[in-house]
Length: 386
Length: 155
Image (cartoon, rainbow over the protein chains, first blue to last red):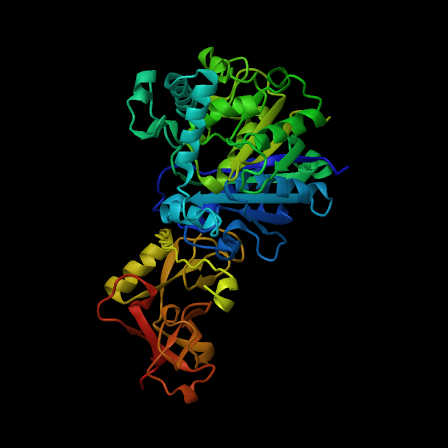
């Protein structure tokens, strides 16, 4: 069994559509400084640095080459991780592996996206297989519209339920100083008035394109206890991959999400997720994804996710808070998005989330990242070491 | 189809358009404003390390401090290394027609070198340590080619 590891520092930049005041290395530097300050460490305390983003989104590969001194990785070991939409989920796993292996004591993970600096659609086109799929691929919006129409037929949910998800996200985002879209939406009608993109998906059902960066600092058990007053313990993590094909008869690609959650639950004695997990921060790029994925993650029975939302169960002060940060629907700097889930969960466990802190005690959190072709990463963090 | 054509391996041929709009950031924006409007070359000083970076950067590569103190450096300097290109590998990705030279140039007042083209020079007479000066474009647009190239200092 690997050594125990803890998160001992987190840092984020604020998020917005464009940061014309900084270049990419400067943006990353802001997150690095915030994480070091949070951990009360200096860059000299960091043994290794892993970095990641969604490659080519800013018209560049090998971005890490241009920011070594800005993230403090000069002459230090480390590498870049690019697993598409899940990059922000895989990157903390990479830091966990590095610290849990015993090779490094203190590891920093740094991830960013500056989506306004490139054409994400062009970059995503390169993701599609040139022999079969590139001819037809259209990006993310169609995927979530398809998920929404499928779910409406399967469950009887309506557009109003998706709108409720947006209202929840917006209410939480308005309390989060780092969130991007803060729209002060008041009613379901406010959401339903937004532009229809691909039925049933409206503009406000979808996440924005955001610019921002996130850094976390991970330490081995011994170092974490020595360096940190409030270490957040990493209990488990899992990455689930498949090929971008419909080889196994699942047209809405839920099997990876389910596999990730059930693996974490089985390995950690979680038999009732809503009882055994205090807060979830899941990667939900669209309202319909949040609904359908509640079911994939076994937060409820099949066909019942929209009832959870109707009853307010996943509100910040509900029985089972999901995305008290406002989530991805409010803030999506793609390469950083998954790691922001982890950082936010760590803050919730520490009780340091500020205005969007849930009032109950947070003992265990479940976080996810998601990307093409439904690749899923999940992590379980805990307040107690055991 | 018959013969070889009928059994030839298929290939997909394509070309993607990948635009980019990378912001210069705090210091590089000011660098290019000065270059475009005043033909000045600005470095940045780290007061703790007493070191001037050119190109300017907002984090010190030695002490990790934040930097914002822009200082003017000379438009003259020395060639630290150079090479001469005699081969066209991709006309659209090369900055000049062959034969041409580029070097790492350290300007007077700066502690670091940077890469630029060498022009108005006999390519057989290039040497390490050669004194060079910036030749500016008449119509400057705010990018690194506002300096056309560096040429041997005119005595």
